[in-house]
Image 1 (cartoon, rainbow, N blue to C red):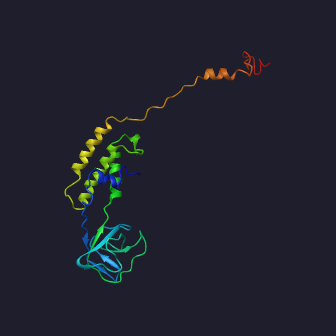
Image 2: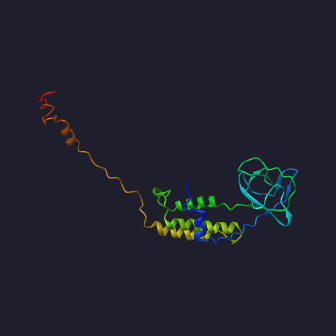
Amino acid sequence: MTAYAAISDVYSYGLPRGALGNPGRLVDSSLAATSAITLSEHGFVAGDAVSLRATAGGNLSAPLVAGTTYYVLPLDDSTFQLSSTPNGSPITLTSDGVSVVVTADLPFAALLEFYSRFVDGFLPAHMVPLPAPYPVTVVGIVAQLVAARVQILSGMTSGSMREAELSAKAQLERWTAGLPVRDAAPTTVSTNLAVVKSDRHENRIGRPLYGCGSGWGEGWE
């Protein structure tokens, strides 16, 4: 399926640039002996993109570089390795890390898809998925919902999405009030079989091909 908004729309419709904190979590260990990072209940799945940094006085395990995107290779619920490419080979750590913070990329793509399908639920069935270019109302609603969600995930705000989703629902109901309930019914052209039959009974010079009921072939000239 296709998302009705892009990350740029999220910033345009409600997310101040540079506002996301996304503080990350301090890992339990980053060890050369196992080339693995331990973080209790890390929640990562294979291919998740993360970056790392060290707090003041700390250091990353070599050869990891702060701010670089790495991809998670989970070993269990509390331990994972890193790869330079999605589902690639694990990176061999050659030194222990100290005071290492791991930060997961915010799930913009997944949220844009989720809230696009949220919008679909309020549209007439025959209209979804919407064709591009998408209505500005739909783009704005999806972008605003994603902006609200990522601010919660990054720790900028607290609370639930209920108020934002109820507001979006009300906007969609007002917008869809003027949309057609279904596609226009196709026009059916009835066929006059009697006329067709009459036309087929004429020969090339306009004389009947059949006689007056006495048998096939009468009337030929």
